[in-house]
Image (tube, rainbow, N blue to C red; front, side, top):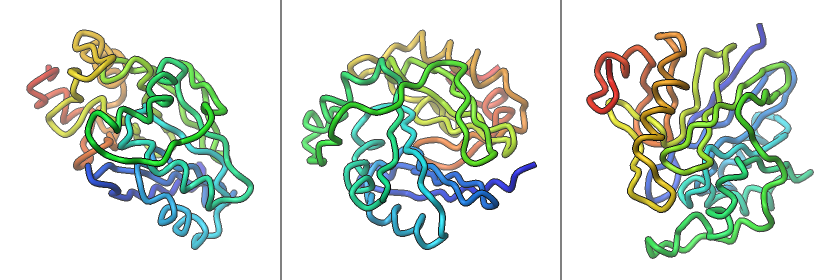
Length: 214
């Protein structure tokens, strides 16, 4: 079983949870949802002596990609960026930042990697499954890491709450279906590491989430 390290960081004005996922033995790491403070994230990766092999985005809202440009500038060689193709329109619109009156750097060209449901991604010897979980955005995905017993859930589900669906591309029925089929089918002790707020577990949300529990 590989030694999995997960470093959570809270970044940006909306207090987004960014995560560094690393295989300690291999020295490889990825950053999930660098919503801001790309330079700070790069320093943490460098301080550990890890190679940043990719940037993974659960979706393309500005508070999850706002640090991509700075992070790419700070890391050599420049790692590829992954996103589900159905969120590329949102990427090109800088994640909708202008609608909220928030300025972010243009994240640049379209992402290098297209995520699809059922893909397996490697961080050293740590494998993560891509689960397409539309509802918050059309191309939202979650990353399930069996070796660590965690799901990086983005803005799909939170502690006793769920992601909003009133923004462009949101779909309430799709969100509920994603949670029921892609989250509640995981082992109850799976930790959910969300895009905002505290961690929770699948079992906790099945029992107590007032929106989709039970």
